[in-house]
Image (cartoon, rainbow, N blue to C red; front, top):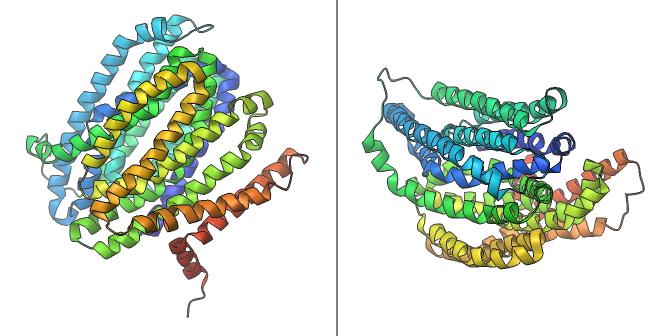
Length: 497
């Protein structure tokens, strides 16, 4: 499968999914109210914390599918997939049972409910448990498609499901019921459809062997070490990324927490620009590492890292420089935009640094090396818990945002050099200077210069056009400042003999 085709398909799918995820948020808040939308924040916390329970199965199936030769090992691939299916289905049921037991306590003792009746909150949390369980199953099929490099099919299903979730939820809130229960009921129905479609897409692309596949302890044993390492890394990372939300959901009124959830949703959106790149490159990293193609691996590593810096860095710099104006235009609520802008900007910078770590992290996974990130995440959790316990009560949501930024800055400065020392000796400076600093500096410089032109006095449509032009210029400057990306652009534009 063509790398370029996979990247384009990933961007189209992820871009559409991101649009569906955020485009209707102001409407959700308008119909549901800030307090009910705070339950969406609770759902994001539950999803983040409980996704640990996949025990590393989804990354494991992705890596094994990338390594397998389907012409000779189709039966083994089917057996491994069937084995992991059984494991994750059991875990999904365990998640549902756990959330069912937890829901009454969360509604009665944890959340600060003011206008939402407690039974409605309990019912909504129960629905969340079903959605989270189904997402665990869905992630296995999505990882399998990534490993098989069948990313066009992946993104067709992804875009369709995202449309059902986003536009469908808006329609339900507008025409059926504006309550939280209706919202999460629709999300659960879409999750069922999504799992069925992803499963069909995977099995359609696995060659038929004529042999019935079943559960295999041997296959499970073969991936247990890698899966265990990934589980520890993921668990600590999820804990780190959700600690702020856990504490804020307990300490703040639900409507204030809803605004923080809104800011966090915006700040996380640029990460959608990273996923298409790493999804396309991760199977190739694994293949190059397995085959011992070190020079090809180094080239792919730096090219993908520069692509991430160009896409993610430009988006993050745009949010920091023009976020207030964009939020005012998008929401139509100046008070809401002004109240969340600073938190959104700080969270976005932290998310940008977090995204810069993605390519180094996937390189480690391709090499089967999980111990570095596992240890780093454990240390970070030990340090961040007391920090947040001090910062959140004193500074609230803003303090939590700054803690997130500081955490990810420490990762970039301390963990990346250790990774390069073992896997890519001599490539550290190139990563910092050419892969990260130059694209970011170019985007920031152009965006800063264009702030001299005040477009706020124009009509809303013209303001949107102006912001799109500014964003495009920032993206172009960043791409031209990234050496490997610039070479690819020149090759595309150069007339062929």
